[in-house]
Image (cartoon, rainbow, N blue to C red; front, top):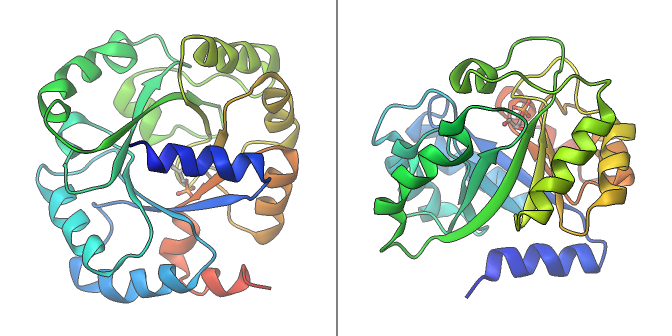
Length: 241
Ligand code: 1GP
């Protein structure tokens, strides 16, 4: 059963917009999970993503187990590394960093991951991951040792996303990077959207309700927000009205 992906597809068909809260195991204190997730449960969020660039081995599984005790939403791994894979989550974005040219992040890490995925019940969702330049170096850039695509290289961004779709990827994720100075501009989202028939995820540097609305209007099907929730838990409340 591929329920997470089918639900994303169904939401896209109905033009229902989705919102993922990203929890970084490196930043979340276990004792705070219960309170945080109770806020998430009352919010308009539809998914919980768990992952980060620099996470100690074992931390993700402990965190996911704690989140699952309280969460009503699907918990999806958004792993920065193979060590973050745990079958205690519901699904995993199987990310290929197609904006870069580092073979480890295009296919190498995926081969390493198979021994963990083979016998797990995780729903594996193939995702083309594009890092877009946002004004400062991101953790993804540092860890993957790849260069983001420049923001003014719109055709390159569009062609890369389309190549991901034609390779059979199920989702495209436009990433400005956690804590990005500039979120992905709506016109970039819109240009990519026009070429894609698969759902589009957008994340990185989104901090206001207006930015969320603009990204949805431009064509994002699912928006990912980490930093804004980390720094202000009342951010959930501002999204209600
Ligand atoms: C990072 O896209 C996500 O991978 C979320 O970014 O932390 O800036 O919301 P923020």
